[in-house]
Amino acid sequence: DTLQSLVEYITHFASELFEGTGTPCRLDMPASLPARALPPDVRHNIFLVVKEALTNAIRHSAAKEVHVRARVNGAGFEIEVEDDGRGFEYPITHGSRAGNGLGNMHRRADAIGAKLEVNSVTGKGTVIKLAAPFPKGVDV
Image (cartoon, rainbow, N blue to C red):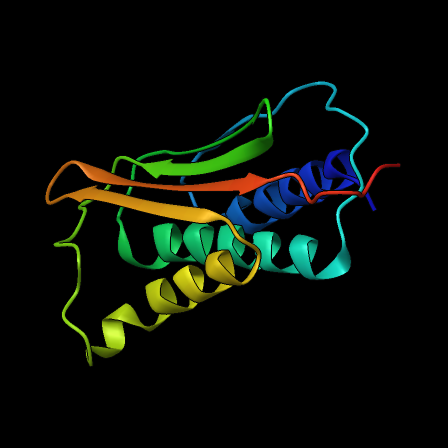
């Protein structure tokens, strides 16, 4: 599987997830991406980070809109999920059940050598950005 197919899958998933929620999900995805193969563990972890971010936006943010962006940046790519919801204090104290999803997202990013940034402002929303390098020695 390729980066292109992963982005298409995320686009389809987000569209279906937000259908009927009353919250629009804007998708800003490149029409074409480099032909880069992604190993199964990389694809799986990226998808689960994005899925958690989208699910959290629906469940917890009370957002009026959610925006998903993907872009390529030289040695890798970024996927960003932004909402204009209630935001939260970050970092959440360890041991809080409310932080389990974020902890899992960080572990998944670490497992594939990616960087996860969480920026949240109470009353203004949250941005979760996953920046992942292209795996070395893997081409289509």
